[in-house]
Length: 349
Image (cartoon, rainbow, N blue to C red; front, side):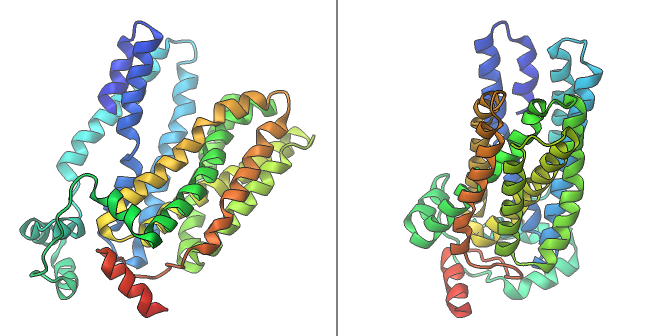
């Protein structure tokens, strides 16, 4: 992602530029989901929401830096902006390599018991003492390959149903989440300030999420957030005063931000370790797929806001209805295998 983004500055035509942007997007696609899974697999259910909050706030701070970078370089070449945004991410890669530890859960599942035990010791003796009673060191790890998680998700009917529901919900959330910062120009407000306000709205949304995730159910919270975001988005089609429209847009975006991270936490709780990363990545792809339609809808909305804000609201409302079919996961311990997940849910029923 980082190298392809930096190499974009050497583009001599739009096709080379597009190729580098594709490679950068390809590399970036699973980073958010993988980082969240990696972080949450190292903590218990009590701290799962807080880890999601930290990830969300970090993302929001990165987004907040973009309008500042764009404003400072508004009279400079686009190449300068790519240098500003690509160089820090290369440094992050070095820090990840030096500082980030692999998930012990994943290592055990791959049969790499010695490596997992070594990481548990590095995390601290408390972690080792807490984990040992629940780990079967003699248990044979399943043989997996690159496509195993996808195959498992497609074969198990309950897993496929869950995956389709969370991906559909993610598509609706993604349309609002990615479209709102781009569509603010249609409201007649300063583009730099609008994007900055949207980025600032993300930070309290994750703080509120930290409260919601510890007090409310996953399913109810997700439905409430998508409903609020959809209604406020639809209300933006009315001929309100500019300040009212910006307020509605901010509430809709705020709801979508909180729903975004709630959906990711919900997804990693719905699936066991053996397929968690694959499921989370596919949900993330569904979220980003919603962004594919954003430029088209925003362009159409310049003449009629119903075609942008109206469609945003209807899509997120309709796509989240199927969340009613999902089980509640608040406070539930994470499972490692599909059989373990099925056994726990049968006992709960």
